[in-house]
Length: 275
Image (tube, rainbow, N blue to C red):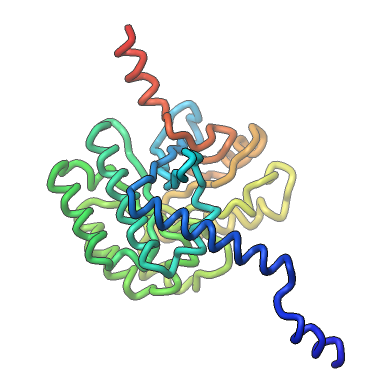
């Protein structure tokens, strides 16, 4: 008891204080970047498991550009802004960039991340409607990814919004499945088109019998509910081969390519201009 009393009088530890200061600094940078629209998408390929040279679609991952020009990955700030207005505005910018990319590149499909809190946000809906009015084909090439954790915060809102948007041709992916949040009973109601298996089951799966069993179980769930599957964080040829053998539909990870702000289709376009 005396030790606890002493700790209370001391306040937060130096490490806690440093973490709070870091988060506050990142928040200021991110909110300033959003205000000035200093964001970009980094694109990562998602390939067919049985024909790994063929890209099925790309995931567009939001990045913030700080005042020095440094690109900050979403993992460094997304939890900080998730419940703030800036989180909704960032989703609007991500969708805006994604729809513009689809309009400029009619041969690709693109997945864009979305917080469940944004799906009913009026500004986000306006961005979607404006983008689809400019390019009606965008709906059938757009995939909206919602994390398992985000989905379970407002499941009823997600179910209804998905029904409305799927009628327009938009697909939905449940991201990070298996991280421990989804009540399995909701899978019937959600009717996601794609299930993305969390990386904790994928890394090193070629030599991990437990994760092979768990992945088979997830695949059985996806087949029952008519969902395609994506294995995330594929980082080796052995893991890719094992996942293809297990029956996963698509593979994503550094083995096939890191997220880049200069994707393959832009490289091809640039080479055509040069020649």
